[in-house]
Image (cartoon, rainbow, N blue to C red; front, top):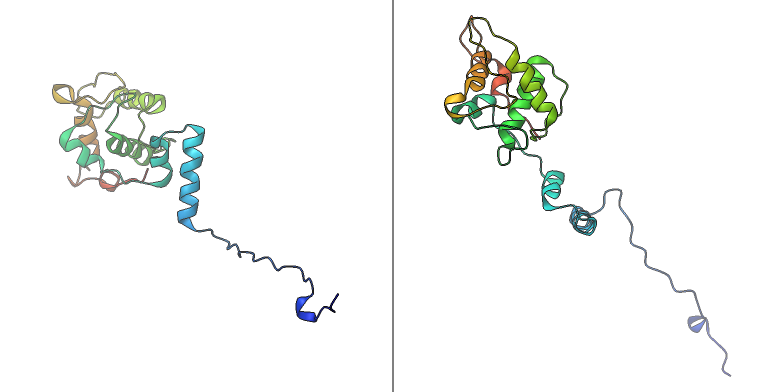
Length: 163
């Protein structure tokens, strides 16, 4: 048997290790999240909420078309987030701004409807923000948004919220 030279000696093969960075590739991370969400059965609705923060219209912009908001409403999440932000900033209500009109938003709406503004008729306490001829809640919000002394809107009423 011929003598082995140093170049033919059995050296352990060097494994090429990929250096993992502190922040992995976002594309790979996004694909992994999609796979996890699909495998676990969480729908695209949750996926959309996980990756995309959206910005709501202001409460005054929502008031222009006075959408009908009620518990479980769909396709009005921007105005629901604006309403939640209005309650949070104007009255200090501890609530999350998530664009979902749930039990907590309904309860806060009922309390808001029950409180009376000076020189303003009572609003029916329904827990819904009605549209059309029944938009007394929207009218109350609009009246509440303007400073009585200056006639200009409060800053919170022109604010856009991320949700």
